[in-house]
Image (cartoon, rainbow, N blue to C red; front, top):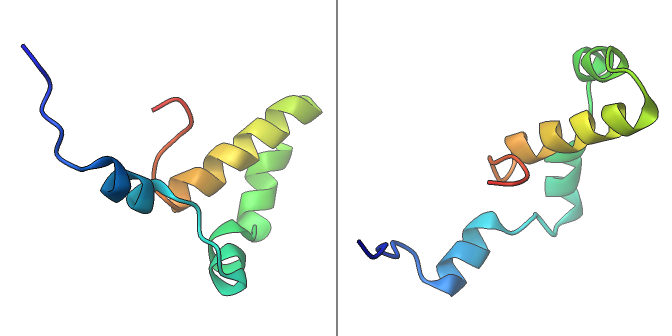
Length: 67
């Protein structure tokens, strides 16, 4: 069964694009003390970085990598 496209390519790109304004970047991608505590609980630099990136993407635009 063919898949239906709900959004056009342009609409999808607009929806999933990362914010461009400095205010939005600060609002969505700045960690508070609670976030930093969660990040520090991960083992290894690579895991901490990956967890931090996933946390940011879940905030905005609201999806995890690989989805």
